[in-house]
Image (cartoon, rainbow, N blue to C red; front, side):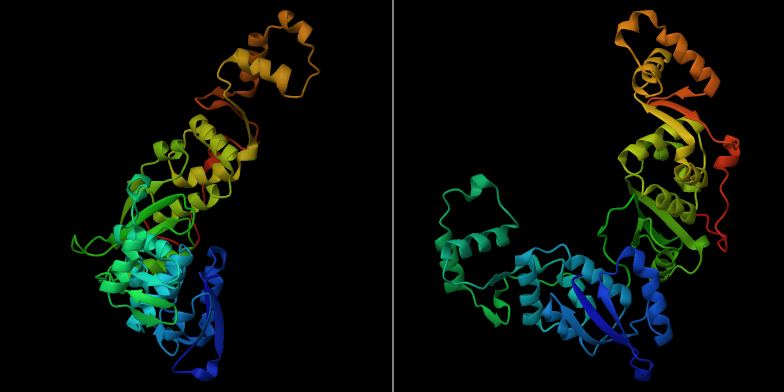
Length: 391
């Protein structure tokens, strides 16, 4: 948690308050929206949450107290702050105090440019001060560039030639600072905070080409999808246009699907089913996909949920290799290596493959052991209450 805020309804203070920790954990997002419901705040677009108090690791955010904010703006700000190291926190707080920021949109924009300023908290070590200032001006430097440089002179040039502004967080040197304007008050700039399986860009089908887009990092809750749509002015799924930016899905998933003809809801549910799988299980899913040849995201969702119905032996690609695995490594038999020359591993493996109706894939051997027919297992049910969501 970076900070927590006590939120209320400015127009109905008698409704009470809700204390929300930020950033909001993914699993708690829908619950948080529900908690704000009785206060009639938490709108997807409007700034209807009054901040009565802010506490936590960023005392400068107290400048937001007694202002109205949007819940998702606070959440995005906290996610940005969560990536800061100690010096970046000092830069952010020093410059926010120096500029006397009062709006949450200003705080968000500052997270993208506060690294341009130098904040001095200790004037005793000029070598360290100069090194820090030099790195700030250049946005970093190579080891070769740093070697032999007189950082004490760099510090003296800063202190003698620039005007510093005293703040509670240190003396701030602007370095020609210009406030970023990446956040327009509606569409959050692209920023991946948590691990995700798919990143997509969302925009209105009828918006001008240069209109701001929104970004989704699947899986998310259905509530987050709909709130993100509203933030960019999309009121129904028929107006939705998606562009796929990045995928962490097994490569077999990417190869099996025609993403342009999948619904956002189905893709999100597929990512939700795959996300809990560990690396070995995701490799198994890839092999199962090669074996079953699904054509829709809903089918892959069901396969991911029913992986235990399949036998999988990694890196086994021939009947002989499968026979050796079954006799020597599976644990079904007590194997005596002295008998290796008398065992026809290929024949044994071939018989098992035929009996199991298994298949060798690029990832290994796969066999289905379930009671339902494969097409029945793969048949996905539509999400209740969702319709018209095709892209």
